[in-house]
Length: 331
Image 1 (cartoon, helix red, strand yellow):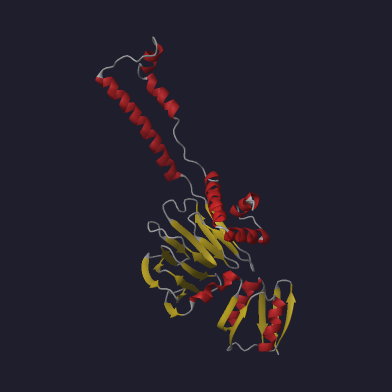
Image 2 (spheres, rainbow, N blue to C red):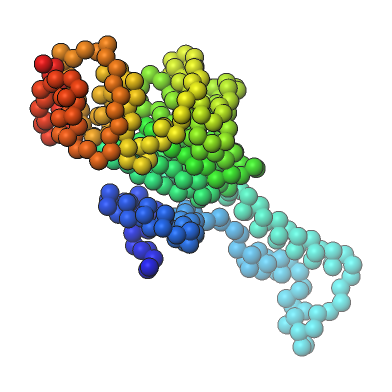
């Protein structure tokens, strides 16, 4: 199969439409060679889109060194054989070469220190899902209305990112560079693992579900350890006071959305509606429904209208759909 370079470049620029994103995700999953090709291209893309280091003009510096010595004159005389010099002269020449080397190194370090960082942002719209592969091989899935941000020096000396919305991470292991996810008041620190994180602006909680490995959760402001999570544990954290609860459960369910399945389990009406809004990319208003009820159901390929018809069998309702808005009324 030919390498789809044009679409890959659009993918790196985050300019793909939904069909192109799905094509690339299928292409990456089809063959490890495809993944390696993409990672190589992504590294080149990051390189050419960020300023290179400024290194001093070594030739100009060397000319200045020559002008302060008789080195050039000695080369121009006779056959170009250098005259013998005294030890002080030889030491001076060696010093000049050392200065030249130090100028080159210092130019690199100064520009690296003061070069302004740029940031990459990957995001999804309401009702949309996407996948990204970072420079270290870490795979990230983004659910509806989610965003991932990281600096241009990602994977150079650290692996720090910011996340909003709901994301699933399959983190590449690197003992020397922990993977840090900043979700606001809380940071998640891992070496190599897979976990799901929910951090929507409209929610008053964070949720972290661990599938494999181990994660450490820290108070971001104090940079202080809060707790560790083990596989099959979910942390529910209050955004306001950072009080938390750790629940033992089947955390595999937390990543079902990456396979285009929405599981709503024992949820209140309010929570169920929030999840449905994000899943279908619509605003839902409701009235005359029993808010004390709990709901459990699994959606796969059902359209919004198909779901509402199924919901009507559980709880009798009337509904109206207007563009991106839905009104539900209990009977």
